[in-house]
Length: 396
Image 1: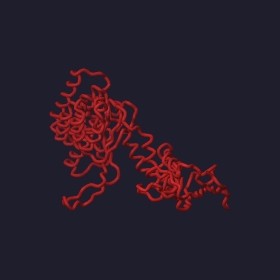
Image 2 (image 1 turned 90 degrees about the vertical axis):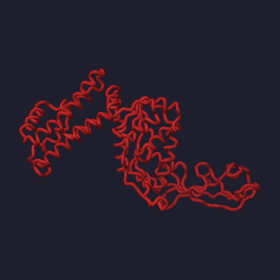
Image 3 (image 1 turned 180 degrees about the horizontal axis):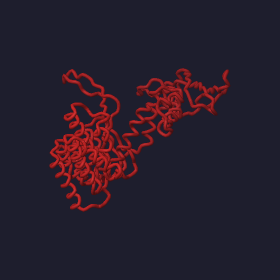
Image 4 (image 1 turned 30 degrees about the vertical axis):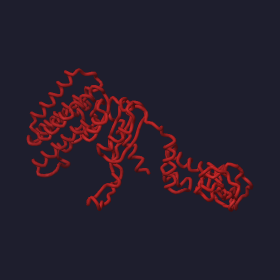
């Protein structure tokens, strides 16, 4: 209750508060109402501004003796829900600081400056705000996306018993995303291990796990083994973006190797194969003929030791892109395997170790790649969240 109001030299109000509720005389430990006052206590909790003016609070309250002999608490002070014991900030000030980050799009540092509090206080308020906003149970999902992202640097500690270094903070984090249901980021765990993936999945009940029909991952055997163990009924899908990325990397490796072998140095301006490096990684289906035909002619005009291997690698990559292009076209099994066999044949005929390694990887992940082509499931949602996470981390 406000007992008096005064103005300071800057015309900001100073409110004198006293406690009038009888419930504040009950011991927070045993709940017994006290009738024996101990002393007076004066605190100055901080609150939100009123009408744009900073308001100072002076709360004069009693300290009571607990009347229950068996209670371990000897004395206690009066408190209200808005100002819990030993708190120097009101609850609404903490809620406003956490809401500014969670709903207002501010960083923790910005909110701390705006509310004139410390960074740890705002960070704790964000955790409390998120705990109230997030559901107690993750919603059921049919398509689960799993992907890792790197945040900051790892921290290590020397373990005297083991005689080795152990990671205190891992720079790798694994995110779990609802790809089709619109629930966004479901959770994030530290560490890039199969055990961490399995622990997150298996903390859900059997009904939630049975609802997962597809799991989209990149070409990571750690995720694959964890999903096979925790979700044996789910169909594992290899994200086609990572398959195309692997093929483009193989073409780059061929270009760099043959350039070094033929020219005795790395590629540079003036080397036609180096000038075509970006065009080589572009899909032929999206490249205009006015750019595609001159590129092929330029590769054929290069010395045979350079142009022929690069052109063969590019053809292998395009055969794989033709296979991935069947996504969303409802292809038959015959169409898929026909293009897959053509890709294998191109890699074998090229005689390039990079292409043979690419064919081996595709063969290892063949079932997962085909599942992605047939189902059309993509892990693009996870990649989008990773980008947002990195952006927010840099801003923070």
